Amino acid sequence: MVAYAIGVQARMQLAEDCGIRTERGILVNEYLQTSAEDIFAAGDVAQVFDPATGQSVLDSLWGPAREQGATAGLNMAGLQTPYVKIVPFNVTRLADLTTTIIGTVGRGEDLDLHSIARGDSETWRQLPDAIAAQSNFDVNCLRLLIGPQTLIGAVVMGDQSLSRPLQHLIARRVDIRPIRQHLLQPRNRMADIVADFWAKLIGQFSYAAQ
Image (tube, rainbow, N blue to C red; front, side, top):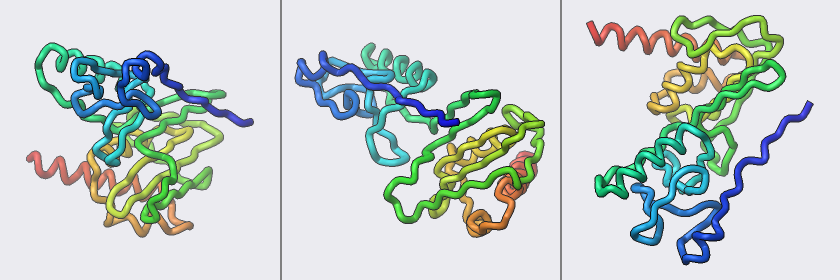
């Protein structure tokens, strides 16, 4: 089976006719303001600055579109409010298989990035604070995009026990250097390494709160 998505193509003719700067979408600054001072753009058509990558990107998801619309409204009302792009988090279900995509999952051109994937041989743990813990899947796969110090992105297929921990690690740019080399070893159980690291991290938070 092959599944694919064609994505969203922004309709920019009106903006281009008005001389507003565009690329793949309508370019906006951190206040969702276009190159025309009194015109703002938000949602699927807006190409928004991403502080994590230093690039302007399209973010064709419902959650970010709502946040961008609210921020654009505040700025149009004179309440100067920067839009801070959150780490993408998207969940889909296809052929009874739940797949979560977090952060950046493309390989890119950065030679310091490592993309690794592990499949059914992984041990999946039922973490008590997971977004959704599912069992009895025939397929459990995990893919990580690993930067020099942090996790950049993840794809979780099947059991979703690691979805919330990975979202936390990626969104907060947690330093993963203590486990980075272990993750890159081909025979190591990647899911177990992440689960153990997360459990220790939660333990540190709990101790600090006492």
